[in-house]
Length: 250
Image (cartoon, rainbow, N blue to C red):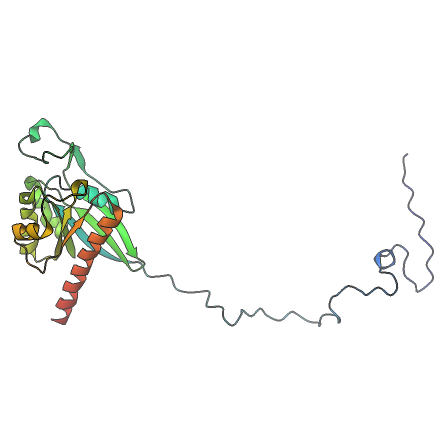
């Protein structure tokens, strides 16, 4: 078969519908209601301009302001949990300057009998955490050894507060940090790291042993737990804001 014969459509009278028209083939039977649609043809001319709904807000809103940066120090003696504190809360991979401890540090760097520490911070730790859309904390962990004390002045420049991490079994190691912030006049909070979930001394005994006034907050926290570190840093932030408010009123 090399051809297809077209259907023979009926002859249409002059002025009538074409037999092959869509109306003739697909029109509804007499008496059947037509399709629901526009009753009258659309008005001539261009369509009206688009108008957004009355409750729609502006589409060209200015970008939100970046959060205010706040510098916080995390200080304390050697092996008390400063690096762990920064790493537990940081929303980015923390910058650490850890170096392996060698036999040259025996008798110089004493992490305590309970510690399994094999590395030490030789410069600083760095991390950050966003508190809300208007505030972001930048955390700087200081080295704990006395021979790196010359770096503390540079790290403390521009800081608004500090968290002094304390091991309740080795209170002597935190005295240099407390003395430094008292001399610098920088607001600080003493955070007692609960190793294994326990403290060697009660908080009241620790406050007496450290000879810190009642105006210095003393909190217990776990350097491995993010929420616990967050709560300790919020106390530091509250202390720093209180100092800034009092200085502004003065």
